[in-house]
Length: 242
Image (cartoon, rainbow, N blue to C red; front, side, top):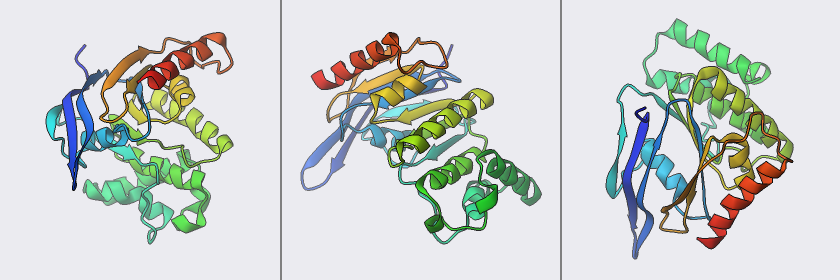
């Protein structure tokens, strides 16, 4: 089966006073409906790669091969909400960029707001929301465009443990119900093994692919099983070695 997206020898060098290599010859493919996590040491270029795939940044070398009909959306670590807009207006922002019919857009926004549990806060502004609610807004905004590929940059890293766990479960439901292809950056190996079909391990900067680990544990994952811990340890050891 042809991958929905192919990352082909991507390298990125930031030209500051001293050239800094962030990524070096990164290659992998994503199959349709797969859930993939990228993990690695801090500063290894994980988020940079996501921004290149999203078209927010150009690579220094290599290319992203993706069908132009594939729709993408991205969820950011720091929520990336517009502080002067209400929850409803933040959620609808992506659709406005796609010139959707107004009535159709209103219907889609209302549906996503309801599904993400935001019905009671539509008139509030981001500063009035908890971190978990802000991220719900970010996810709802991404989903309004009905993406084929959902990119997530450490979406739960700034949340408390209980909120993060709840949103992880909801993300899995969204992925399965909507048949999405998901690529998520994480700094937690346990999170990656809990969520992903495949974990891509990066080396320290410049980020290179050290290992691609298939996670064949049955779903829902038993986070206390020996098999879960064994998989986590295998990936963690590779990060430590690299």
